[in-house]
Length: 357
Image 1 (cartoon, one colour):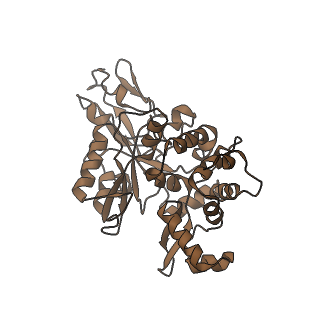
Image 2 (cartoon, rainbow, N blue to C red):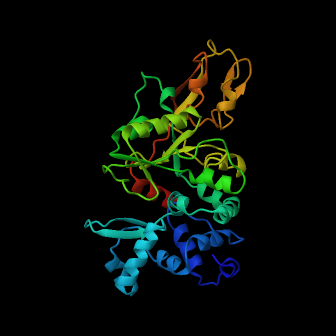
Image 3 (tube, rainbow, N blue to C red):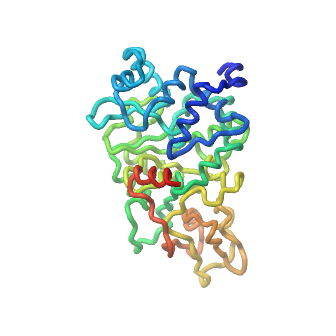
């Protein structure tokens, strides 16, 4: 990104058009008064890339369909689309007819996470500038982007759970597995705020076998390696988050409130309900609790308080279950919420609900 693009955005700038197109998506990309949203896009996209991305549709179109609709030459347009997809700027997929297609991709979850191989200190700071100014506006919209799934050790064996509530089931049902470095912890480290949690625990899933073989960004995992990665994340107290839907969940973010762009919004931006809680909530058996306080520092959401026994703040508890395995007396366990929120079944249902709001 050159200095001129950082300081001068004309009314018809391709970055303004792209920002508006991204904000029109259900995931949103709220504008910032200081134009930090535009500075960030100018770092990630060239003007030519931004201009084309702003004109793409969410539904997959073939290069021929895009070229015809926009009045562009097909060969250079096809080459540009392929290069943009390779850089994680747009979606690559199949059209309804099963042909190669391209479409606009949300900024989060989407474009930003795909920059893990390209992010540098400048991009990290530009994201932080935008995060502090406007990113929280997209977190206030219901239903939320992320949903918490409890760690498997925290759910009693006698409790019936749905597949979308079990991170273990998500791993088991997938056809292939992959892992990438966490963009959030990478970004925070680049601006001088590293945390102690591991980087290589952000997981991607696919129904298709060997989907991540030969992928330049995603490291393919075996089923056993995927299980071990998930367990490694749980062992250091990371919170499992997935897309807020029941079907076709394709990623598992193992998050922390010190770095995660969504979870840290609770403390820094004051968005108390920015992540959809799990269907469970923590409870304490007062007859077993010795008030040792071992569980208190483990909770990333400040939902536990040490009194005569441990008490649970039901508003702050997201039902992640991270605290349950550390209790030496097994006094903590998860129960179903009385008024549990059921996630939308499909991504299209989630998108429709976001659009209505």
